[in-house]
Length: 333
Ligand code: UT7
Image (cartoon, rainbow, N blue to C red):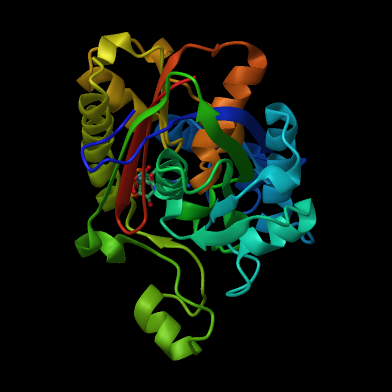
């Protein structure tokens, strides 16, 4: 296909998926022993029952590399055939080098350019968009897009309003050229006026500055849950709508909606907005909690492996997160 500025555009599809969840399960009942909370409160307000937590030695790059290996295997590609690795994460192992470079080294994907992007829970859609554009224009052939986060490392385990929400994990897509279908649209947006509602300050601040910025003397997650909730219930349907509009697809034509897995009530609000039954919406948060940038690729991979989602299905994905950011995509598998 030739676009309006004369560039031959390729169809770009998901040619492999993989995901990895750490072994350790932290249940709501475990959390009852750690903070003043209850299984019933967490389930009622969020839908979450349990989440996975990385071991002390496991970092985002470990989770990412495991998901990436599985995605490569699924795609039937050798690591050296990958031209680009993007890791979406807000819990990098280091300020630098990037988590993507650590993954590149682990995989021995020696021909790839590798970098991280930071857009919190929307990060995977941002990374998908960047990789899509590089392959679509012919600049690269194959890309590895990974969402990997270990929010347990930066959670405030004394703050019941946040620590019950998050889990750790990684999900990966291999993108490559396909004959038809593939990524039909993506959309991204940001609203920096809401930056203060969901934060984790850098670790180099002293205790006084941390307290000024975060309310506590720790470089941990802080969130105004109600403000983020308000943003989320408005932006999630908007994000789905924008990507569907761009793809020229009606909501009724979508086989599966894959929303960011933050809160069941937010997902239900989207289903209500589209007047669609909840069984069109993939929900994994009951077992994994909110795994940030990895929640969408984990959900997609799980559904492909279980046979629920099949080749040819149309998927609509939408995420929101700190920034505040949002992103969405429509893909024919
Ligand atoms: O990826 C993006 C990340 N963030 C989100 O998506 C978060 C969006 N926000 C939310 O999902 C919801 O706002 C929360 C789940 C965080 C909170 O639910 P809520 O219905 O908005 O609760 P709330 O903050 O209004 O708090 C209600 C009550 C408060 O007590 P009082 O003031 O009514 O006595 C809280 O102190 O619930 C209390 N509370 C808890 N109680 C038991 C807050 N957290 C807990 C807890 N266990 N874990």
